[in-house]
Length: 151
Ligand SMILES: [Zn+2]
Image (cartoon, rainbow, N blue to C red; front, side):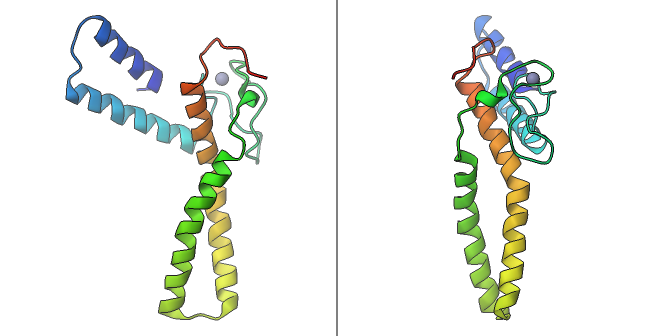
């Protein structure tokens, strides 16, 4: 169930006076989370979920959605995704390298090659998903469907 559908269903239940049961709320939460993860793994336009979010072979956001003309280029996330990833990767790769050194004690060139590949690979996998998630959160919480793009 896409997030908007889940949100509408929840709002409809509130309008009709039905009380939100804990199980229903948990189901909506899980479905929303699954929808968010699917969105991050295959980044698309946060509004129509059909148009591509990035230009080919980059993490550069397109100016407009090719399907619904949403002004995707007007996002305001700056370096948020890169900084977020930098903290996560620094706090995970450095301890891994330290433990690897304590256990195997390899020559320095092994560290240089191994952790460069691991770091760049993690960035290549995680940066598009993280940036897509932040853009989706911006559209969900700061922008409405018919809003004009902010300059
Ligand atoms: Zn779109």
